Length: 565
Image (cartoon, rainbow, N blue to C red):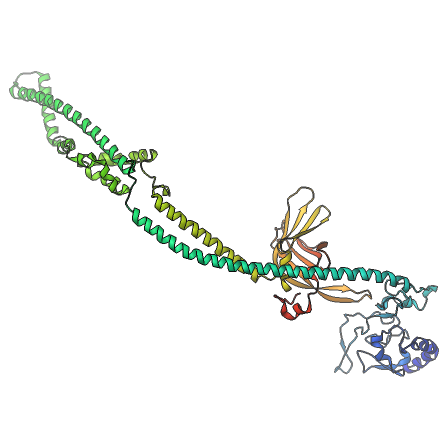
């Protein structure tokens, strides 16, 4: 039996049923929604919706046999429920056209009088279950499989739904009002930043002018005090150094005088002894066999030989005599004159006033003397950056310059930070600026999860362990997610996301990161947290900031006008 004969038999068998189904107002076959009624007007021939080149008798509609690749000939049965919305297209036998075998209808249409009409997936048609959540009128179980009869509950369900929708709508309007408040707050914060920049730039300009004046005053103070030392009360370091040098020189002179006197005495005695021995050598009889005398004479001869090789005293008499003269006292007689010299220069100038014979001795003692002077506060320690040697006028001027430089640098740094902040992306209308720094949290198991807007996400232990940073704010982005409609359809929806990266590194894993997926909601709340991969988290949250902005902002009148929002 061919296909045409089979269709004629089916028409004769089910014709009355089809007429009842199609004879309803608008003559729509069972399961067809009003928006698709135009495809079913011809009661003689039906053209597949997505493949109009394929035509079948109208009597084949809802005959429990899937004739069309897109399933459009079975709007009221589950015959074509095997077709997936994601099934690929395939070429026809001719190879010229592609046949669309994806479902062209969203599902079985439930009128739901007294409630709202909805589509239910074809798989749930005549499956022996009353699906009141979608088909409150029970029309999806029209074949009464197993004697099942689903009564119409749309009136009751409609009332409950209406009440819930009113609450939902009320919450949505509240969320929109809060979004408006957030946008106003963000705008105010932005203006405050701009105003602050203007004030800081003016203050910085004034400081730059003031700094130039202070630098000029400092240079003038340095010029006025260059080479000067403390005076007046005769307590300058050079004055004290001069007195110390004079006292040490006098002590040295006395010691040298005593040494010279002792040396002269010893020299006289030595000369007397040398004369005796010299005369003894000249007058003794070498033929006299006395070994003791011979040894004494040989010893004298050796002594005279060594004395000739040494060439006299090792100590320079001229230098010693020069040290005893008082002509070197002149620089120390009047220490007040040293106050007119530069202190550091006098320390090195001191050596020029000492006798040449004792310069080496003074140089050897310089290190220990300098340490003594430093420890007694008479000389600055050159190893330290000590400004206490500067005159007060210079110190005060320099402190003013330093203070002005610090203030200027702080203001410039703040200006830089504020300008960088203005360039950051805070979303449409800079909406997230109003939330920056605020935190929301939710307990989950042994942890409390915290989200601080535009800053970071954290995992806090509820057992006293250390907190874990799950990510630091990086950018505003968006994500496409799949959502299931009440009719069972999977639809894609774009949502705003906040991306947080570079958190604490997992053991033997990556650095933690979190994507906060936002939904429009009246309150800022964390709904759910999940770990999609090792140390990669998703956090679902609601916020008024995620609600659709006014059309003006969408059209670009908002500051950012970012596509992701």
